[in-house]
Amino acid sequence: MESRRNFIKATTALGAGLFVPSIQSNAQPAKPAAKLKTRTLGSGKNKIEVSSIGLGCMGMSYHRSFIPDKKYMVSLIHKGLDMGVTFFDTAEAYGPYRNEELVGEALGAKRKDIVLCTKFGFNIQDGKLAGTNSDPKHVRAVVEQSLKRLKTDYIDLLYQHRVDPNVPVEDVAGTVKDMIKEGKVKHFGMSEASSESIRKAHAVQPLTALQSEYSLMTRQPEQDVIKTCQELGIGFVPYSPLSRGFLSGYITQNTKYNPANDNRPSLPRYQADAINANWVMIDTLKTFGDQRGLSAAQVALAWLLAQKPWIVPIPGTTKLAHLQENLWAMDYQFTPDELGELTADLDKITIVGDRYSGQSAERVNK
Image (cartoon, rainbow, N blue to C red; front, side, top):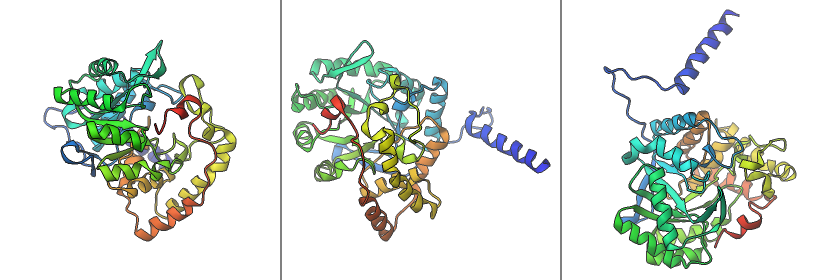
């Protein structure tokens, strides 16, 4: 019993060290941030160096059922900085607006030490997304508002969130090019764009990165846009690299969602039957990871990192333990045989359920 009490005391002390910000005395300067491995997005004068894994901030305030207390999410972002994360992703659409405000509050004092990304491309009416809008005047207005919420005077990487069928991508690229000349934006990116749209935009203003969904559950980018990015020297940023939590193994057929603040209840892939059918993916990742001290999520992220040296996933989380788990994935190096054998096993799996439906499906790969 005494040993159990001592164990509980030690565990409590450790937990306190992890989650409670330390108070620095005047005699002891703050420790510098850890140094993570880095990767380069883009090429030539359009390249930027970022941590090999970034932090997607959307779920801290949008589309993940619950909204955590803001102060804990600010603390989590600060912990990410301490761990060496330099690449942070948000958008005006997340909330809407709330996520940019959160990121601005958390990162304002560290602005020069990070690469900050946000996005434009939607109409927002009564707190909801109401169709795409990349009209140049609208884009400029959105950027001005984002700068205020983010508490900065420039955006490192500005993405077009979704291609607007009513506005030529050349006009969009030209608008961003002008803002780059003005110093309000440093680099241009697109999200969920087709190879054709990428080429048209890139001819006007070279892209630094394409951000699209890419994971072991969503491998369509391998068919075309990743090849286009390699040809043009564009980095690739996978969002939802853990397939909205599924590849962590924490989502089951019994998982409950709040449909008022979560898109997963409407997505075919997250229905109970599809989750059960796709569980073979978790089993395959777990079998590989169990022999190497890795979680299923770490195997999934390490596999993505092994595909191309210019791929930088941005998993999101609201948990410090999961943030550390995700970052440790970059330390694993596959042998060629390991990677080939694991990929062959993964290739045998047929994924059940589309990733999007309705209007969301119509807006991707455009």
